[in-house]
Amino acid sequence: MLTPRSEDELAEIVRGANGPLSIRGGATRHLPGDGEPLTTRGLTGITLYEPGALTLVARAGTPVAEVEAALAGEGQRLPFEPMDHRPLLGTDGEPTIGGAVAMNVSGPRRVQVGACRDALIGVRFVTGEGAVVKNGGRVMKNVTGYDLVKLQAGARGTLGILTEVAFKVLPAAQSQATLRLDGLDADAAMAAMAAALGSPFEVSGAAWTEAGTFLRVEGLEGSVAYRTGKLLEVLAPWGLAETVDDPWADLRDARAVAGPGDVWRVHCRPSQAPALIAAVGAEAAQMDWGGGLVWLRVAAGTDLRAALPAFDGHASRVTGAADTAPQSGSVAALEAGIRARFDPRGLFSPMTETA
Image (tube, rainbow, N blue to C red; front, side):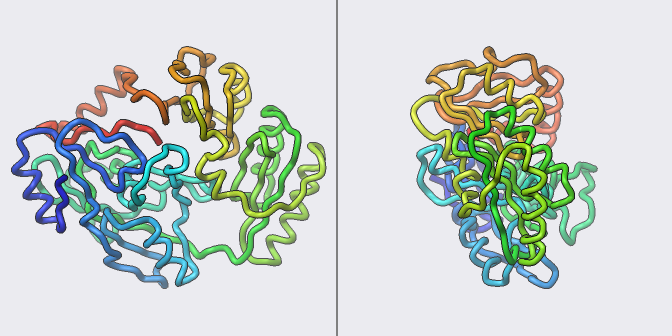
């Protein structure tokens, strides 16, 4: 496996490549595409961390755990709460910060602070021609005219190989509390989450599984106590909520849907989520982001898209056979045009999306 130890070495490898390259970080979030394997795990280390400026820069192969540990030492955290896909996908290895950006991995806190791409302020990457490009952060807008920071988040390695990423980070919460409502079906849970998220009490997590409906509040201790008490009043129509121990690592990692069969991830309007769950007859289901993200486990080989009611969201297979469904014509044409600009030789085999 190709394992460059520097950005210059990576650029040289790309310039000399005679065929497709299969890019991966820790290989925990995706099935690598076709081509000669190339990993960014040799590009490690935090290159800049200014706690006072809430800014962190790290090489793409740096383990997420290393980044989180450094931030925790200063009472700070990544805003987007990156998921660990290993329990769900059965992979090993170590999740990397570049992999999180490549897949735009975003956890439950997205309902409050946004996705990975919203915290990303700068990138460095190597194009399909072996050129090093930097954009964002302290660098002025690139001459291409593209917002390369946003384009790289979720591009799955098709627009270049990330070598360095920069983030705006946030202070860690002094305190947090989680309320759970028991016995709600998806419809009732959706209504309760909508009421909580629509309140002025700054809910930072809203999720539902068969184990309950969970709402999280974070912040200063006194503020959390006050807002939790007010949320109890908001949630009263759906029963008496109780305070429970922190369940958010399990919810973040979608452990409720892990198991035999195929797991699908569906992005949809929250109001569509309950009908979607009912329509597919899922063996297990989880709603996150207040219903905007739905995890479904169905029988192996199920074509979930064929079973879905008419909706304007996006569904992708997470476990099981590789998801090769084509994009719509307009989206495919747009993607092809952008990819041709950054990878004219077609070297970067896209990561097969799994999470």
